[in-house]
Length: 150
Image 1 (cartoon, rainbow, N blue to C red):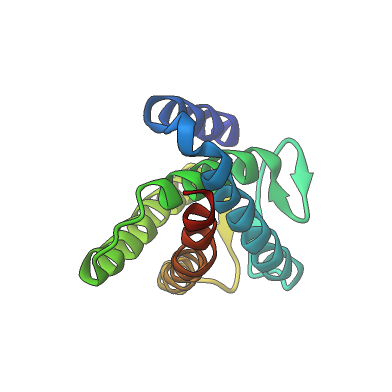
Image 2: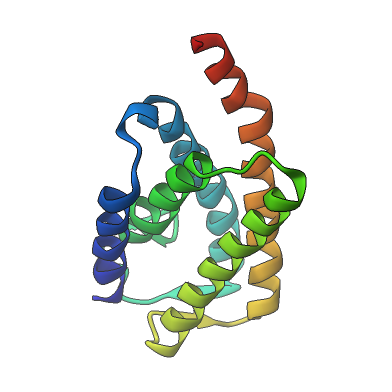
């Protein structure tokens, strides 16, 4: 049930915060985030670093509600609100990672997620790397697409 609640909460956040005009470009941030998450979590799950409980519908070891909820939605919003200044980009990545860490901590407390050979600090490092890569993709790829459309 936790995965469904998380899914619903993220889609409410999406509808409250989305820029409909920029969605054609920003949606690729969500697609890119889903691709990264599926590749990484699929491997981590296969190596039994952690277990997802009660995912309801599973896709490569992850709950579909997680993939299409926080990962897709936050990927779109992360790109939509991506800052220009370098110091702000670092803060943006760290804050996004902190939000995922809090979500993961709550899922651990609710027993929807169980660590086997994993720790929260490793997860935070992985989130920083993933959001750093998404940030790089925004700077290199998404901004180029916006420039071409202008």
